[in-house]
Length: 261
Image (tube, rainbow, N blue to C red; front, side):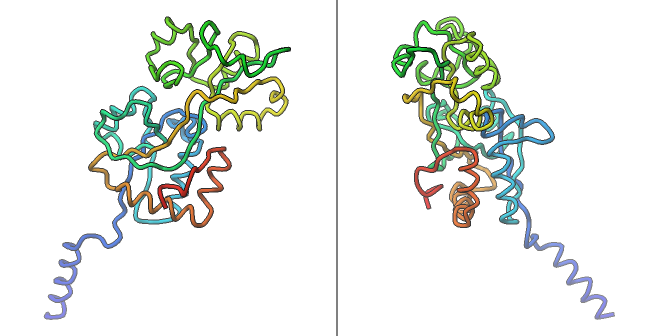
């Protein structure tokens, strides 16, 4: 009888103990932002963010990172309302300072460049004057030449821009003569040119950049994962070469040791 009682006592005590290997679920907001994320709401999202989260999940078992689709215009409100715990690859010029958050500098940069169609006699001076040119822009993006005002009505009416949800559409308009300048994320443009080498000679890319992305990770203050802990996880991926290989494949550049190693 005593053995049976002791067995029940041990089982009861185990039930009261917190799980030794409890997995923390970390919800990561993601929106269509090629090449960082492409069709995040689909069954098979693609891009740097899904691949990075998969690498983090494979490298450790304490946290399980999952995607939560949001939109380019709603993402900061969703972070504020705790729809997700963190969001990656956000630049300080994009207007999230009034959202309650904890920021982590990832020491990863990208940029936006001006692209035009190659024409006889056209050179870098073509990009010195943006006003009066037909612009193809991505809906919801913040542009340096527009003082980071992403209001669609302003971009259409004041700057005469055509807004789409696709870099490919903007580049197609450019090549068909329906736009004069497209502003394209540099990393995506390099991937596009690798995928379409026959078009490389038809595109004039500015040496001047519209803006430099100084990428941050944003966390809600009560997130289950702290910014320093996330930095440590990235550093582990950095040490074994996984992160460097992943960034290189997407033509994204680390400016220093990633996440402040």
